[in-house]
Picture 1 (cartoon, rainbow, N blue to C red):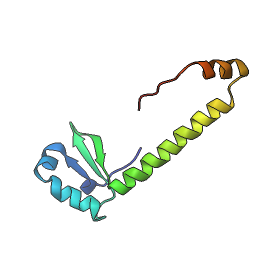
Picture 2: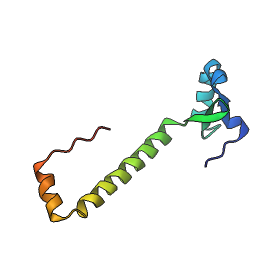
Picture 3: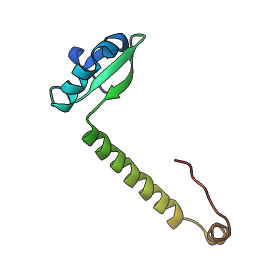
Picture 4: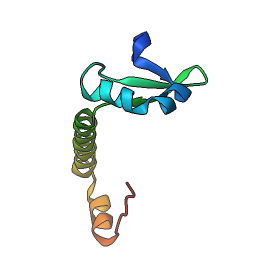
Length: 91
């Protein structure tokens, strides 16, 4: 579990009042992340867009590797079926 310093956490009401200020803190590297607290527990995290894009890219590459591994391990019957059917994946 990730830990947060006290000043890296903000209640949702306070965030609503000072969103610009908190965005400035994250984008200027004052903080790496800001946890949004609701009902005394972290609900979401604000991170810089560059970090989000890096994380999403890593996730996408991992997912692609998993798909490649599944396809590589298919038996011949599955490969025959896969050539005759279309698979739709909603992302």
